[in-house]
Length: 381
Image (cartoon, rainbow, N blue to C red; front, side, top):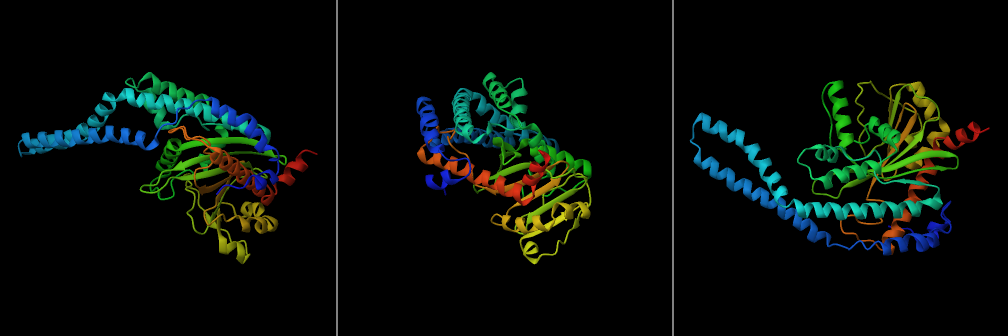
């Protein structure tokens, strides 16, 4: 639920942001002429293309299965033709309706660019840099764009995403923590297999809406990655990346009791860390490869401050190398403009600013909890 304008403007750095949005952001969106599209109609059109491909596959397969003899070589041929027909039918349907799909991509690209410009203008008074696609184009889109049969528009879309990218180090740090693997997946295999899967899964994840800035002397990066959930709304994870208070030699993982451990692929061995306070133990589990380092990070002052950060039972964090990386699952944040339908309103504008208020409050809370603001202040002396 969005905060009211009075609550928003009372937050640190947000005074006057409503007037700025009305003067700079609203006219930009009004002048963009994004030709709002019926999202349900568009989804129905794409669904129709895929359904047509599936119907063609079923009919073709049944005919071939009926024509081939019920012998060992006939059964073998049916087995071989099944995947060929399955994928060929969908590719054929997409090829036949490619013009429609390309037009959808071009409209979405234009809205994506307008949305990015609007968010960049909105964030400017807050001292934030906006990055539309942290880490660049998603891995799946890059692969498709590299295929010889891919239309030029698809290649241009991948190039646009790459040009709108950035925050590579922050994204790489988050990928390395294992926080960007879907919570219902557990990888079993060798160290090399786990590392390969973690890298692949993290690169295929949709990453969007990156912000870089400095709050109270503490530099931070934050972005969202999208966890796809079957038969349920997607989960949008807000990831916040901060510099660790000192160089780290081990790995320390923190999770609220209602969620799962991040998946560390390197094969290191963890041991549970008992910090003592019952209030901490009631909300969290903590494990580390280096008990001494974990206790240095979670000193008594940090323990006291972190107890209030359980965030509806889903909060997780990892300390690794030179980064502290935190993950907060939730709904789609910063959704100023729907790139599919082109829809936006005063309500989506206020909700986006409300999302920024809450996200930056989290940054301040984390920096205070892990004593990073003090580190920053002393470092500047």
